[in-house]
Each structure stands twice: as C-alpha cells, then as structure tokens.
Length: 199
Image (cartoon, rainbow, N blue to C red; front, side, top):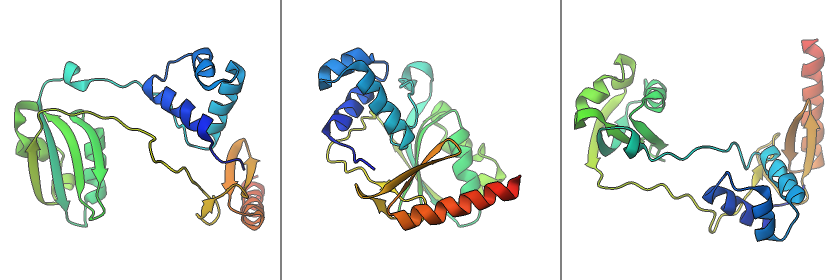
C-alpha cells in the first residue's frame, strides 16, 4: 500500500482551508492534472483519511448563549449516556474525552445557566457527573492543521500500523488495509466465511 506523500499532505492542507476548492485550482498548486487530484482525493477517502467534506459554521453568529468550556468528572455508570447527550445537544460545539476519562465540551449555554443546562441532559446523564468546572470563554477558534502529522493506517486484522510493505484488499466494495499478507489472508478468510453463512 502506498504511503501518503508530500503531495497528499499539500492537497489535504488546501482542502482544509477550503473544501469547495476546485480540482483545477488544487492541481495547479500541486503541479498535477485535475483528474490526478481527484484520484488522490478518492484514494484518501478509501483509506479513511478524508471522511467527509463539511461546512464550517461560526456558531456564534447563529446562536445566542454564553460561550463556556465545561470539564465534567464522571462516575463510571452513565458516562456513555452523558457523552451521547452532549453530542446531541444543540448548545455543544465540541466534545472531548481526556485520558483521565473526563468529558470536556465547548458550548454556548442559554442564559449562561450551566447547572440548569446540565440538569436538562436527563437523569441518566447528570447521574454520571461527580463534579464539574466551568470556564467562561472570551473567544474560541478551531484551527486544525497537518503540521508535524505522521499518518498511519491501522491493520484491519490486528490493529498494528500499516507501513509501505502492507497490503490492501477490497472486499464487498470496501477497502481494507493490512500490515502483512498473513493478516490479509486471515481477515479475508473470516470475511468470506461470514458472507457464506449469511447466505
């Protein structure tokens, strides 16, 4: 399987700046033809590096509320329900899970009443909260970049990193990456057995 090269990274940077940029403009910037750029983007999508093209909204222009950063220390029970409640809440812009298992979210809380807003998460959600801290935000900016990023695909069979010596297989229309031929063979055999059993 080919690894990502500098041209791939440059294409990704251009798409991150403007996902609606025409292939012809990207092609000119990276010294390729527009069809070659389209092929590379399709390969990046197949590999799972590009999942979708999205719209980046300035939510502060669309919704009222007080911008806050909330860190929630959780009990073990109900953490999943609270995480899903936060993800589905209109006030929440980003949800992060820390290595300690805390949830951190950026939200625009109506009326700035964080306790009432958290109570609105439902009984299953608030029962999971042991403690929380709130920080008032004066500004928020989301600027993802590829600088210093080393891309690595995971083997579909064992989870190890797929290097340039890895294998790629398309099964039932989906592209899978493997670190070695034996992982590909095991995965393919199990895939085919499951497909036969489903018939």
